[in-house]
Length: 173
Image (tube, rainbow, N blue to C red; front, side, top):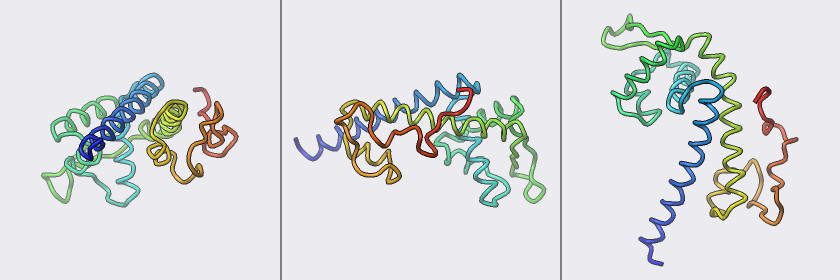
């Protein structure tokens, strides 16, 4: 296979894996929280912006952080505001800027949603491990936390031991 064909084949594999994982995430978030992936990622980006001490996140920064256009991000922010997950107000320091704050409800959503996100990704990657997914990609997805290359000689790889810390499923899920 030529280098170009290999590149395209690897790209197709990566996009397929991404779609599978994102579909699983979308299903979990919608079922348990009534949110889509972009909405949840926006809440996470806003929380991380607050943790980093930025205080506010400009719309363009939020758009770049979640991979949406500025107009799509504006609509997303309006949905989050309408659902009571964020408040927005004009910045006192720069009247052209809008400051965004997470509400207590948003913090609760993030507290519940983060384990759901973890569970969805874990389930999707576990299914990939059982299939014929490229081992280098699996190694990357699993990270160094789970050790070396996946063990495909068993039905369940040792790195998916539910008794390991951080791999528990959220209560009530």
